[in-house]
Length: 281
Image 1 (tube, helix red, strand yellow):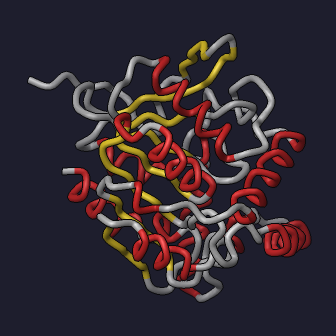
Image 2 (cartoon, helix red, strand yellow):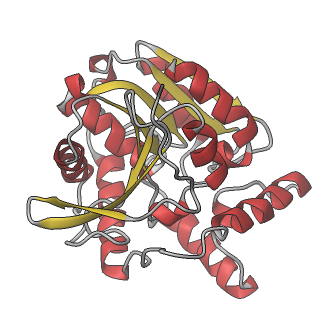
């Protein structure tokens, strides 16, 4: 009989690990055995910003670990200014909690980190999910600040969460799905971590810009099975970047969700979760 962790997105405790003298915060969900799926989150996000429907849907069958990388949310330290350093920190965290094989789920900035981990430590990784992300040096990749500032200003003027504009389409369906997503993020009311500080957000901006400006990586080195997913109208990282990833990765499958944006995997979680579980099998 498989031991179950009695944890879900709302009641899982916030744990800590000492990674080379720095405290990292994390949470664990789902079955205790098997290869865990390590989630790598988006720009400015913390462990409180994962969609509970995605967490709970995947943990119905798989062990999931979410964590705040250095300087983010509840983790100590100063956020690195390069994706490569972020990947080094993620690898150190994974090793520290005693894992020698993982699946990776990288969303947006987390997708950059996942690619870097797979190239640095290929034996550590079994399978990879890349959602709403793009390759280093790709066209339009790293050019997010103008859109971010414009949509963030609009959110301030309308007193709305910027993710309504950045993650979702402005169609009636997209607006309704944005409302539902924002409500789901508020379901956890206890034991939440602090928001990422402005200083560490600026470090993330530098890392994103650097990823977009660097020479393209040879993605043929990533021979792992990869599931690439995105909405058809991604305002933050052009959807064509997902097509580019799927074309350049030698062992990939692509899923594009209609009338969905950067947060398409959250908007279409009812499609995405079953596809992830089938892929991870």
